[in-house]
Length: 127
Image 1 (cartoon, rainbow, N blue to C red):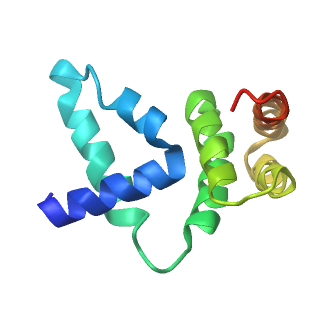
Image 2 (tube, rainbow, N blue to C red):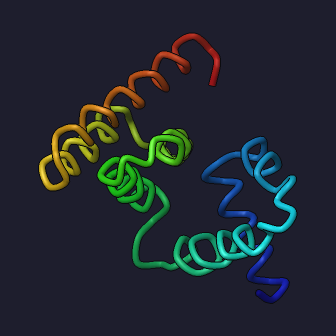
């Protein structure tokens, strides 16, 4: 990835996921470094900068997809990102419900539990 795209990728990722998360994930990849490079290139360097959807909408789509796939850790990360992008918990739950109808209710239940936990963190000042 060229320097300009790498800078753009990093800026979007930091805006969505936060500096602390990005700084933490950049460390210690060792032999798995190609995975990090793919992560920087595909979603953050190619997809998220596109103009077809704003960051807020992309966050909601991502939440729905991750809920449908039962990717709990990434779902929690992207729920926090959706909040940073201005999504309400009501909108996040709607995306999870939508995924649940098409991907199965267990996915919606697990997604809702994760969203609830993050809402509690925010209410307790932990986020």
